[in-house]
Length: 294
Image (tube, rainbow, N blue to C red; front, side, top):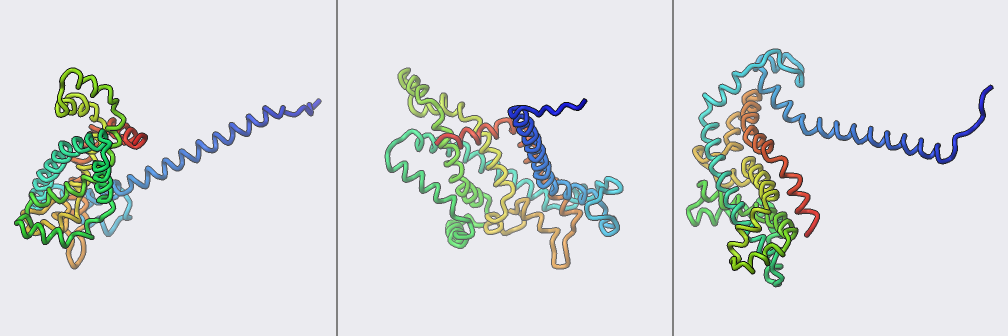
């Protein structure tokens, strides 16, 4: 005998809710997978093209795996291309200087902007924010004229000054909001003990800024290491080229040497990837802490 009893309304509602929840989780997982594939696809293309021989490029499918792992492209880039070594050295020197300058200067400026209630500092903060909205192309010509007038055109010193200047705005915005999350009571206790403002910042506040400082270190390193617009306008001679400029040697009027170009690119991203892997635990916390309060 078949029972004609129906599920209670509450049971049916719970079943529908569970089914909708499972469907939402499935859609979320599909979206995560698709976004992940989208972001890793350039790395995949770069890797397989750099491991293929020139003869294999025209005979196999564009996205297929190489028949054998050919490392000759990497050895040709490192051994035969003098611009790779020159570009790596210049990029390393300029990136270290830019990151060091920003790591020392911007936290001090952000501390003053976050703790002061004077209108002049509020105005200075918004001036820094305005700088974020101005692309380099808008001031490229006057920047070139000014650097040439003081003898800094085609020098790493001039490039470091300009590139660091364009990073200050975003550093000020993120770090200032993070400084506001640091309890003021810690600074008041240090002042009662006789510590000066300078000592209070470096001994109390600056260590607490480690998450956001590491986050900005990664962001500034990425922007300086991959910069093309500023370097192409300032650095002209081959001995001053950074890695993004040195890679142009594989591009000509007749075409692009794809295998060597992707091998060059794969070698360039290794330092940034290593830096991110060692600092990733600080990045999300630093960004979120600076964005929640302000």
